[in-house]
Each structure stands twice: as structure tokens, then as C-alpha cells.
Image (cartoon, rainbow, N blue to C red; front, side):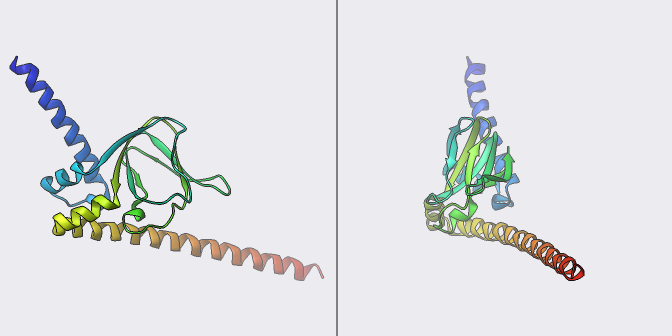
Length: 179
């Protein structure tokens, strides 16, 4: 009889440890201790999505970030249907929604059955109120992640500007040599 109950509790511990393992790998939660990770885990929402199901549409109101526990999603820019990114187990997206109420900038679609964890702005604000030190740690890490992504985006824009400049120069040289 003891082994039966022991197995049930061990299974729950493995589940919790699995979520904490995922959280530890996400930059927003990096450096949090076991107790802090447990506090975050308590406010996460679990949701499953079927392959082909839309998680959110571009233009939808933003409420929070998503963590892929298991599965694969595509981030799609709607006007062109261009796939911006494919994300899978342990990846996260939508983190800007923890700080900003701007509409979603892309559509996210499950490309296989997914188990997701949701971390929402209202819960972060509540956490900040209840445990300011932990809330500030998370917000500071969140700002670091967003800053890194902004730097990467700036580099990509600069690279595109250089390509555009070079194409214009090439076009002018061709036009100039043709006269």
C-alpha cells in the first residue's frame, strides 16, 4: 500500500521538477532559486492546443507570454503569411505582453499537438505586489531578454539597409553604364 501512494507523490514531484527544469532554461526565470521557481509555477496556466489550432492572431489583445512545454509552433506574419520563426519544446514567445498591452505582432499556430504554459500580466502584477523582490527579479530578466531581442532586430534592420543601399548602388551603376 505504501508503494502505491509513494508512486503517486513521486509522479507529482517529477511533473513539478519537469516544469521547473523548463523554467530554469528560460532566460526570464534564470537565476531563480527553487522556492522562487515554485512560486512562479503556482501561477502558470496549462493549456493544450491541437495541431493547426491558432494560439493567437496578429492584432489580438496581448495578455501574457507562452512557454512550450512540448510541441512545435510557427510564428506567422499575417499580411504575407511569412513564417518568422518555428519554436519548440522549451521555447517561449509573447513575453512583451507582460509589460505592454499592445496588440500581438504576429499569429502563432500550433504545428503539432502542444502542451503550453501561460504566464499572464495580471499574475505578474499580483506577484510583484505579493513578493516585490521576486517580481522585480523577473521584470529585470524580462527587460534583459527584450533588450537582447531589440539589439538583434536592430542588427537585422541594419543588414537589410546595407543590402538595400548596395542594390540601389548597383542599379545606379547599371543605369549609368547603359547611357
